[in-house]
Length: 209
Image (tube, rainbow, N blue to C red; front, side, top):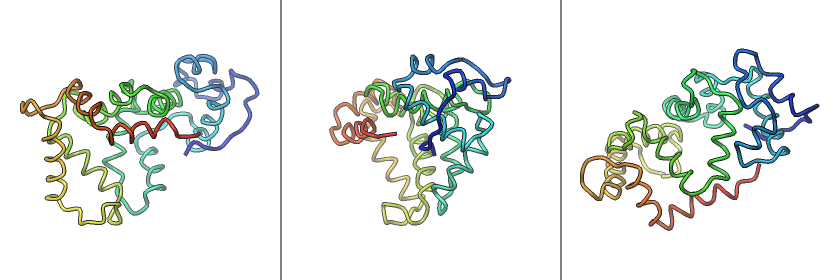
């Protein structure tokens, strides 16, 4: 989505082209450099792609779903994009901006392991309760499998029973206190001791823009 480039006339152009009503801080390219882990060249590249996909400078949930549908034409992205949009719309304005997008990308690509785990936990915590349950994990897995569609990478029927079984296995590993819910400390502790999972998360850091 975000991989095409044009040259900024000035650093201030980043915000001067956005509609006044959504032109929030940061107000300069330097400010975005300060709050993310990207340099100016990378931000210009990402901004070019963002503006080509989202000319208004703000992305609503419906627009976000339409973008995802191009990448997953055989799946149903409605539920997955709803949960992902919730995390991107950090200020609950019913849209997200380039600032929201690039701060999230900065965490996923350049963040520490703890920052990435905090983001993943928040994504799964769809009720903002500060904890995960078997039901929330199952809900997210449903959305992921729906996104992948019938030609999913698991090469097996995606029945409710399959997803429920998968969710139960994951939850059993995470809920080692057997209290029926998982807080972030438990989630982090488990992930830090799972070498395969850590290697998967670390792969994000090798992503090139």
